[in-house]
Image 1 (cartoon, rainbow, N blue to C red):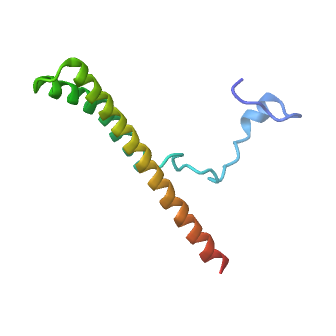
Image 2 (image 1 turned 90 degrees about the vertical axis):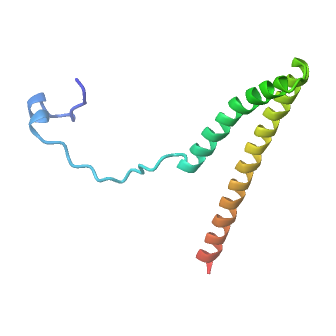
Image 3 (image 1 turned 45 degrees about the horizontal axis):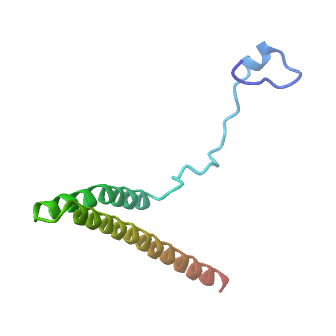
Length: 107
């Protein structure tokens, strides 16, 4: 049986009565804002493509594979730190907006 029937009703009575209409009190907004998802996707693509690209560019210009690997590792760290900085700034702006909203509400 897919759903439970109320106690004291037979199966036929439970099926014959229509289900009550539910009001739409639920929040259907996404848990994570769209701009955050796009930032994550952009930095993920950068984390994959930039270090690999820098490795091959460094090898193409005559660097040894060891030096090219170091350049690729530094590039990956730069992308990582850039993502952390952007996320920190975004969070700071949200906190400031929330503080202003609370101050305005308190007045």
